[in-house]
Length: 65
Ligand SMILES: [Zn+2]
Ligand SMILES: [Zn+2]
Image 1 (cartoon, rainbow, N blue to C red):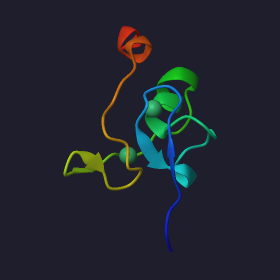
Image 2: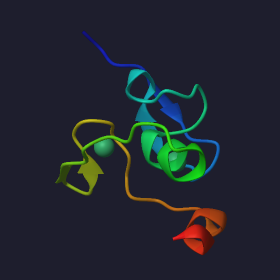
Image 3: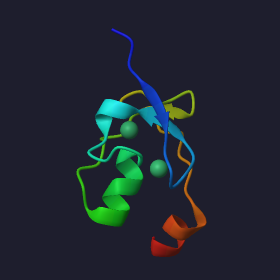
């Protein structure tokens, strides 16, 4: 089954829609910003094979880390 790919409002990375609790924010950003469950990222070819996040971080996220 094809997974739906959407773009995170925060970091601008594409991700698989059904891997995030939030509708417009990827699992990584939703975890950092709101404490939601993160993906157990497994990177292959510079993307996570679980959630499709590409490792992008917004300036705001960087300032929180
Ligand atoms: Zn994001
Ligand atoms: Zn992931």
